[in-house]
Length: 195
Image 1 (cartoon, rainbow, N blue to C red):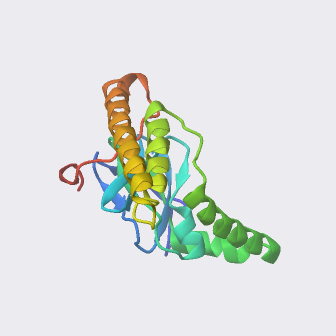
Image 2: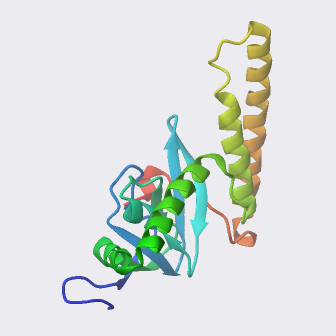
């Protein structure tokens, strides 16, 4: 443990399928992966959209703690995982002790990063990540369908999106079938797999 009597940083073991936090919740801790893997996904339009897989040495969950905004995604363990849990009070104490310029800079960067998350497609770290990027782009294009489009345009766009969704599903099957060879794979779990 690291920290004082009232708060400490601990390494905690979580079983596969454990939900660490849900999209929209208030942040109470940040995490660093010691071993195992954590999947992250966002829910939008009734679908779970995979975002990334977090591996050893990587930090996640810090933004909601630093800027007091709701969690942007749901995080769950993809396998048995050991995490360093950094409570909010420790992070906020470190921020309070930081130079005021550094504090302001961190808050500005968090605001910018949240905006970037909504528009920037991160560099793919696996076939699964790459397919998910295509899926998110397809979702963006699909937003044009309910608009005030001429019927022929709407029908053509709808048909192409249907074909694209079928191709994305086929690519997800390939990524899933070759998950062992593609270690940076990310996924969403079925609700029955999560605790």
